[in-house]
Length: 378
Image (cartoon, rainbow, N blue to C red; front, side):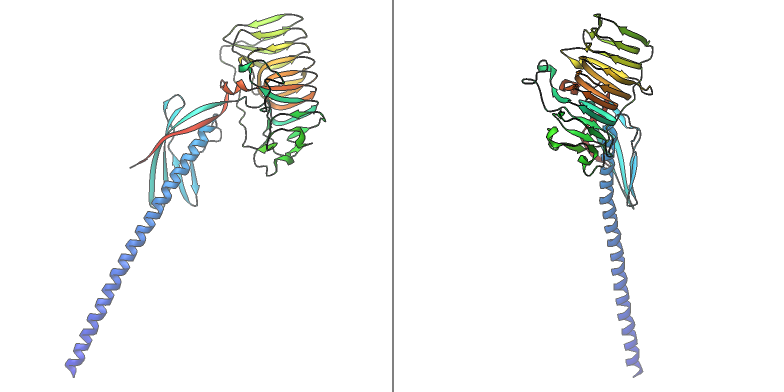
């Protein structure tokens, strides 16, 4: 009887030992499988974090000035890091390395990207803080590369007007006879873009949709080249003043009085530090090629052009001043582009955006970024 009981005890111990061993093996296997699953999950997530970092690199390169560049990020506790600085392979050609980290997963990628600068002059009129159209204004576009402006044969629908402002009154339309043969653009984050346009009338805008909300339009600073002297220039009466090309010029104050002409023999860049005034019946710029006459106003200098471009004044070119207030009135005709802090177009003034300015990248605020190649690094 005792031998039988002893055998049962031994058998029970053996069975329990077997089951305990089996359970232990199963737990170890489950633990291993769980660790492998977690590692696989984090490794998979890490590559997507690295790709998010690549998206950030593209965003960094898109804005030329780099003021809002980010070199890392956190997503739900995981991170990506962009190696700085980027490797410059050639002008506007970059190599980037990005690491994504999630838990115990790390993935590294390398990419080659090319940047194509975009022209700053992509609007007929753009005011950083706002635009007012206050009269019988007409705004459209044409292409000087195919010939002079003509309402019938060389008039297009790219006469866009924009601003970075995104509140009510960002753009003010206050004229019964005005017409914009293009699209209105307000600042970022506006769910109902039309609400930011005071006096909005869809019959006065040809764009489809007539108003859009777009990302902030960078307004780069303007710096006078070193070694250049800036003197005042006033042109009186029937004087014609021709700037030799190619050339870079600077004037502290530029005044073109009635009947005077300021032009150039080809592409020139004119810098201004104080003031600008074009009187009625004056002509400024290159008639057949507005893209050849660029006026850049120094940042930090408040340039007010109150009633300065008026009468029958004609301007063939592009003007940019991040702090400038432009007032265009009378029967003035602008063939080109006006970019500033605030734009007011009054009277019967007309703006004809020259599409040839899309190729002018002497001053760029954004770039098109092309991903040429990428690979994962070991």
